Image (cartoon, rainbow, N blue to C red):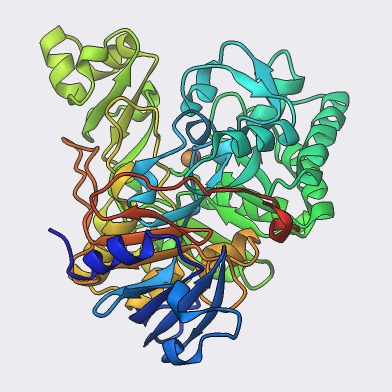
Length: 504
Ligand code: ZN
Ligand code: CU
């Protein structure tokens, strides 16, 4: 089902033009401020102007017969969405079209989350947590080499990278079951420093994962001090999201506070039935900590999480759906309880037999998710795992679902706030310059959508389905996607902190 406005888009915007004028759309500019009906003029890779009736006020350098006019009546014109939490480091190189993301209106992905980044590490065979980035080798010892690879791959969307603490540990340590020595800390700091100098946006950690768990807080704090020198941020998958979640939040907060850098708590959730309702404790703590430091968090709008297959997450109570398994690929998409019943074993035993693998864990409570998504510091991040054979539906549906479920159905916040959580707030928190807002001079990353229709279609059973209602997506001024279609352009860039405007 195509919106009538799309016909004009296809015929006018795709022919060679000097400028594109998006007319009469509802301008939701990413700031969270009230929307209004107006026009957006794109010239080259930038937004030239946002205003009223721009057709009659084209700048002198722009000739009317060289403008592609796009009728956006009845549609929302918003900044392109920024996916605050991804593991897209490798997929943007190997499958640069990346329809799963652009089709949701996403124009920038933040990579290297949960302590696991492709850079700076070189190895032929990725193991354990590193397999989150997909099979294949780690080939990028420097951020400069990775940036070159991204530029060459020509992804459809922009990439902003974090450097993972776990990856740094792999790069300098021979045994990850202990804390780093003083020398190893120095070597990690040097590698991180180089990456940040090459434009990385900050540090991430995944203290929950076995290879980082033995690291004391001081090991991370030392790295956070390096980040401070470059004006970056610290994002963390905390040590735990279960019983000791408040302690884990204090640990993360102290680490960022001591170094004087902004903190981002990754995929905030209260995981496991014993934790349900605890967002009533965690969110007030976040508010309190935010009085002394810059603090935000990302969240995905689903009650199931997804990660590698771990027997400690299998409690026999919650549903666990297998997303992939090396020894038993045929079981992907099935419930662990059914597999266990077929094999006549308990779920933990089945889990061990299926490893290495991945799973979706139905471990959250809808009211916690609703409370967390609604919080003013909540940014939307998919945490999608693009290499899973049967991925969690968040990979294809996260951003539309926030509109369809939490805005349209549950009315938890305004349309403007929903967009802010995906754009302006995220750009500000991650210090991504000149994106995430619609205003003259900013980069022309734009998502045009139908707010009455936008919805996720991907489900747990059938997770690789295109969302609906995302009418058109522009990346760096180029029409990159139209609803239901293929990727039309590859103008994504590697964004580097501090000098993103100079990146070509
Ligand atoms: Zn994580
Ligand atoms: Cu993650």
